[in-house]
Length: 233
Image 1 (cartoon, rainbow, N blue to C red):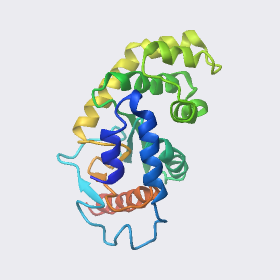
Image 2: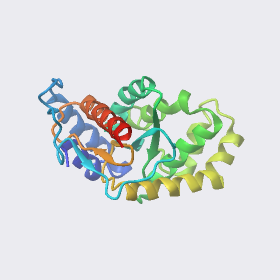
Image 3: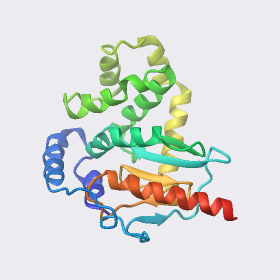
């Protein structure tokens, strides 16, 4: 497990430790070096270091496409920093690749509201506009969004139709999606975020990458591998 992933699964697990998490993450980031081709990500890639097989392989929800999943949480400071990178990367993916995001809770009650927040914003059509704003509210403005009351209060100041959002946030569809996300988190054996899964068969580890962008280098290579395997067999 890489240094950043150990950090996410330990220090950044509850709202009352966010200040500590910011400080520790700043120290990690300060020591980061630029990712150089052929150094941080070896060629060929190494199983157990750069990537790991997903066993058993998981069936995607996009027939005929290579499905890429990003497991993330708004509470994770690394996910905050990764978000602009993966957003630009996902926008340039070829047509045979489908990108989806999966908000995790790891069974934590405090992370359930922000997972529902993601799906509710998606349902109301406000996700693209407010996606980064949620990260900024939690990590820059130190707004607590870990209860239903806090989420609804914050949404009230974001120019969103309050009733429409509340209906989506409390709706059966959102609850079902969060339950499905938890099921996928377990099935894909996700133990930290951000985590990228490719084609239901490969998990990006990036144990030796020195910048988060290195995870995308590995993801690109795994997509190419999945594509070649589909053509050959």
